[in-house]
Length: 107
Image 1 (tube, helix red, strand yellow):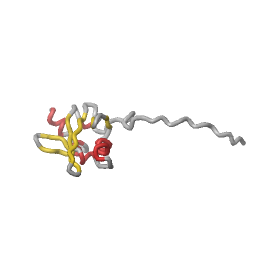
Image 2 (tube, helix red, strand yellow):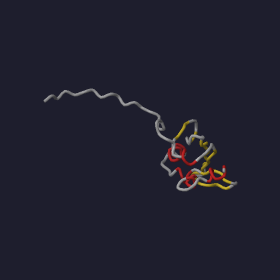
Image 3 (cartoon, helix red, strand yellow):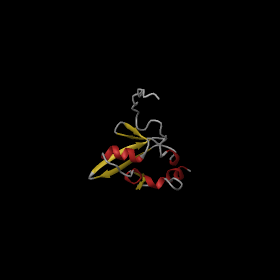
Image 4 (spheres, rainbow, N blue to C red):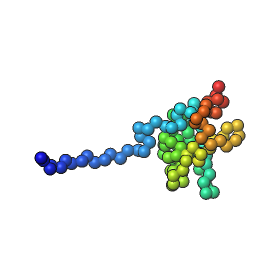
């Protein structure tokens, strides 16, 4: 029985969103702006057509990861971020679990 230890390869740091499918992708047909308010601060971001979220020069694959980047703490991004639909603020949560209102308006 050998007690020879093998060297471990160093861990490769990767971008958090690398290799992940954007969670918004199945629910949208195009790009749009989103916004939020937290503790008196306003935040804005952009959802790209592929479902990624651009916030503060970075790209995120989920609303929650973009919300965490904005607030510096964990948030439910589906309720944190909102978008304008017919002049009304609508939470992103309205996009999942049923036919997307953004896709309906495109029909």
